[in-house]
Image 1 (cartoon, helix red, strand yellow):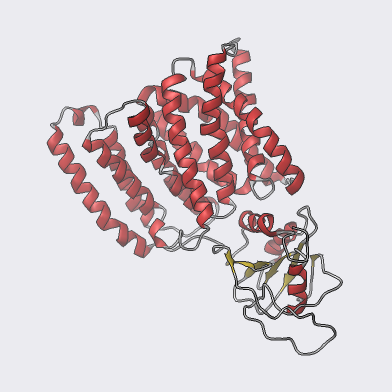
Image 2: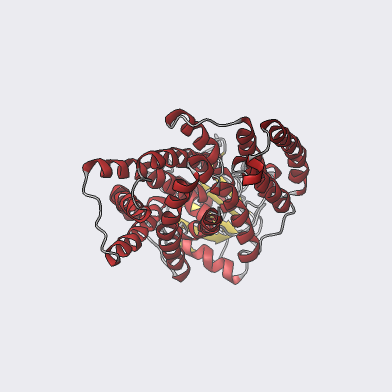
Length: 456
């Protein structure tokens, strides 16, 4: 169990590293970079030990499936999701892994779960939701597709845990992890190259450090531990690592990112530990009759269900940006030539309506844009990032968005905004209470170049 908690600590930090990395790299590139760095570490370890890689085709076929479900799909989905939701919420949703693992292991590996273990799985999941304030509004103010991406990653991990236990725990953990990551690198490289060409790569020291730590520690070293945990505890119990990860992820947010402390972290942590104890009980508990233990599990579940709404009420949402949404088309699409009073718009800032054609702004502006000019830019496929009441550091961060390839991003002040930051595209809008480059880059990537005045 000690290795499981070490692994949870490493992967809890990984969500922070992913959040930083996607500020300068596309999600497939983040996934490819981390598995490539992890592969370099593990292949280097094998060479130092003079251990060869397997040459049997059957083993590489196993590496292929492990890489697809254990790396390519979940790593890409987590990075893509963190462009749209917070790292804490991503960790919470990814904690669905043990539930998927238990179901898949029961079908694929014919594992039998006692009622007390099922109760422990459910209790642990409830603890995770309490720990990160899942009921406090995070999901309601975040991207639905970003949330689904994190859940899909959990389902993919569940398949990988079961498959690796059946086919890859018979060989040395370092060899198995190295083979899986080498295969994952080869599979993810084409998509990483393609998205890097279209979206570009923007690196600074923080992004470089994050991707290095994510690849070397969060992937290379962590995967050696992961294989050993699976071999020691089995697929379902090994997947319990995802119950502890959100506690680490939320704590990192409080300490490193200066996020507000939530008492729900304490409530959830207690429930998580209780859930793990039921799924993997100490030796003394295993000698107890099944009925008392099952009764205890039922009691703890009832307590959890009572604690969930209480913790939810005391928790506040931590998402910097609300969910991007589509607005109705303003039927008045007249061109406005010359000066005069601005026409009426159905939304503010507008995403359609009367507009000024002609020369378009670009880059970082120091003066606000008129509403007709804003809509004119959106019609031409621009994404407008407007702000108010920001300090110099935040302004410098927003300025990075104007450098995104495509040349259709404008950063401009607007003292009349309803929120501190509002990103607009044709018929689409996202509001933020603080600078979140990952979510704003995701909005830009989805909408840049897609106005009615473009071919996109």
